[in-house]
Length: 95
Image 1: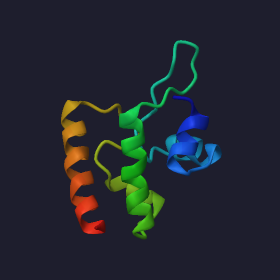
Image 2: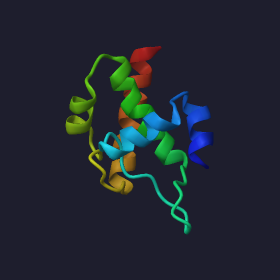
Image 3: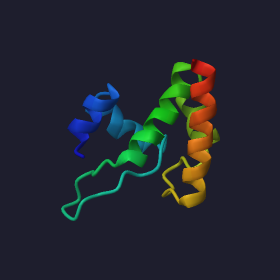
Image 4: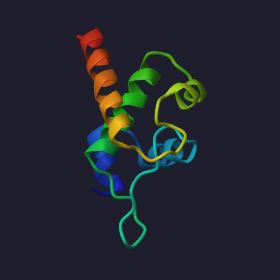
């Protein structure tokens, strides 16, 4: 999905999505063969994960430094499982 579609789904502006990726708030977004960002469901999960901490009052620097898989690293199977577990726990706390 394009950055415009990701912005619409997440409620985060295009400029902020680019900024958050640039500072390493979540892993680098996959790119299409033409070099355009190609957001997938896992990308959206990482964005949601980071934004939950932000809404909780955590600074962007702290999220970047403390979030597993952040700082621009590509996500792997283990990180996907970790993210799913964290997301589930955060969701339970928000209910």
